[in-house]
Structure formats: structure tokens, C-alpha cells
Length: 123
Image 1 (tube, rainbow, N blue to C red):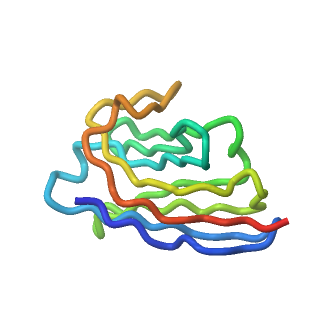
Image 2 (tube, rainbow, N blue to C red):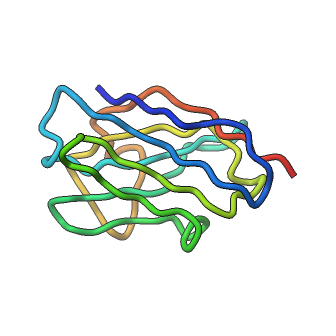
């Protein structure tokens, strides 16, 4: 089970931090990350972290603005989102995958999905 939290409404240039708490599976065996889906658009991979691989993935659109971290003691992954833009507005979904690639991150890789949390960035 994946429990996401931390979404909300923020002005452009502001920050939000999303949290994803995992339970029911071995946290260290999975890469945990975030997808987002805006109205009328496909779900896209935003960022992912693999403790096993010791690496992270970021979509080009968020590099330099978003940072993903993992607290393995709490089985929780965080996505710090800075310099938010209106185009970041979407429902953000936490996800867990046994397979990890540092080059790409897409929905077919996902084994478990959390419920979405809305992020709205006003201009």
C-alpha cells in the first residue's frame, strides 16, 4: 500500500513537498517514485529513486527543480518540488516498481499505485 500526501495549491515559484509512505511489501526491494497526470494528458513519470541501485531518475521537465529522497527507516519517499510552474499542475501518483531504469520511467513498470494527490500551481 502506498499513501501519498502533501499536495495543495501554491503560486508559481513556490514549493511543495510530497510524501509517499509504503507498507505491505519490502521497501528496499522496490524503486519508489512519482507520476503525474494533467487533464487530457497521459500519465508521465516525474521522478524515481532506487535504494538498491543507489540512483535517481528525473524527467527533463523537472530536473534542477525537484529532488527525490528516501527515508528507509520510515519506508517513506519525499518529492521536494521547488520553483513550481503552472505546467506542473496535475494529479501526482506515488508508485512502486521492482524494475528500475535510470533512463526512463513509465507506467508499465509499476507494480503498485497509490491514490493521487492534487497539485495546483497558479500563475
